[in-house]
Amino acid sequence: MAEEVTRIEIADRLAGLFANGAVSKHDMLIAAADARPEVLEVLSALPDRRYTELRQVWEDLPRVPVGA
Image (cartoon, rainbow, N blue to C red; front, top):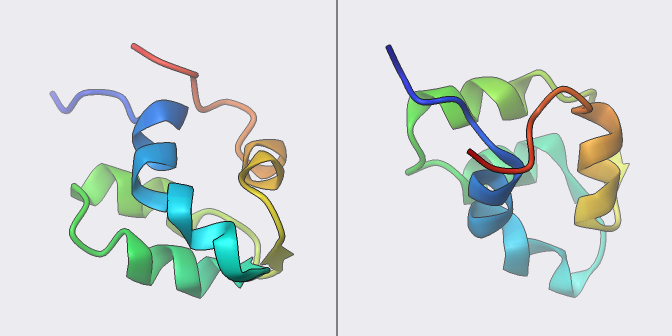
């Protein structure tokens, strides 16, 4: 069974992405393209909207745990 996706894992993939302004779900999927499939699946569940900071991602993914 695959290891659960955590906020830390997502943050590691997306940390620098917000430096230049708002990003979309599509932008996040591109930035995480080389992540394991489970991470991409979680990010795919995000609504189609603009995010100006990583904290907003957690608002839309409240069930993703902080760490293992």
